[in-house]
Length: 68
Image 1: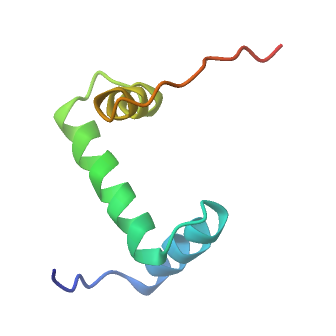
Image 2: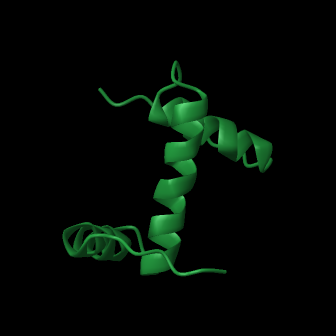
């Protein structure tokens, strides 16, 4: 484990997002880093597609719902 220096404003964004997403600040930053890396490696996939791919790899079945 290491220490990553980030801009204070970005840290504040991570802190606020972590509250909404019920994650620690570190877990939120790690999540964004992972999704960002996957997005760069798979530029044709949307964020939703990346999330579905990750959930499938973890063998988590998610019911799809339609919003009218």
